[in-house]
Length: 73
Image (cartoon, one colour):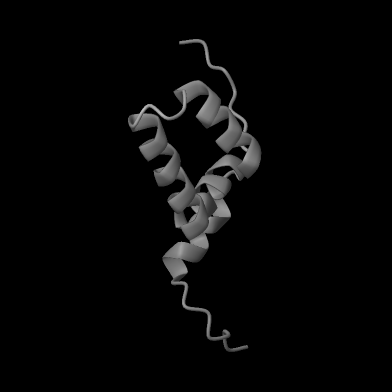
């Protein structure tokens, strides 16, 4: 059966099959224009001293549904 007009390559198909949930989510966010724009805006506000980094990052994470495991390091 012929493939649809999907523009993904065979290599991308294979990569998508091997990604775990976290990697797939990170890839989705990396390509999401709204996420990238809001992240850049947050970084600008932090750099200007308008918000504290921890508070801004926590609010950003809540808005985008992000959570991070603490790693012993």
